[in-house]
Image 1 (tube, rainbow over the protein chains, first blue to last red):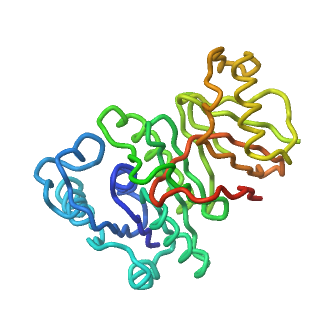
Image 2 (image 1 turned 180 degrees about the vertical axis):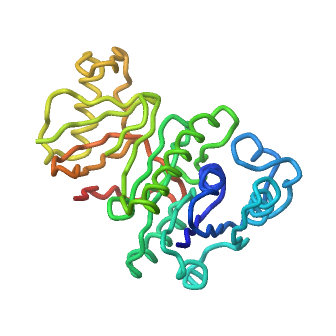
Length: 190
Length: 92
């Protein structure tokens, strides 16, 4: 089975680390580079600063855990979705913007591929894991609205990414699809 | 009729009374403000909650595996393009 994680920022990077033992090939897709501020909330280490995120995470997984994954340090566009996503048995959307989420969802629906979305609110108080058949990407309220960043959100990011990892594990091992909400009240399966 | 779950400031709680699932999102938000202010939502009582506290929140309508309709008033999660007209969000 091949799992393609689209976006390895806060949620995607931690989920990838937690999924390193799954009986599946992981593919990471992200065009962004690791910045020093990313060390606060994402699964990157200091020597990875300046590197492409997908490549950096691939190196970390190999060097720290001996796990081999695929990495594509490119921006997902309508021109390359087939090349990057067509071999996926499961698409995991961890992007942080409406356009990219829509791209993944559109591809998944057109190809009838399993697809799950993960997201965190900008204030770091709420997270969502939702399969594509019940997902509609939110639009931002104002242009340039901040995404969830900052070290203070790391515990919530950890909770959401762990919930996502568990969701992926259940899909791989049992074929089940569970939606979840994560808040300070706890994790609720919906 | 459906159960309304309200998430605010990191707390997610069910409003114990079922409400009309045909209500518009605007009405759902207004009801949520009232019941949170009045203390009718166990564990989520904020007497001074702002009138527009839920203005930028989303109402999801989801069916449980058992077929029960539930509504979730929650913060927005992802970000990106400028907000357009709000569409009625209804999934089954």
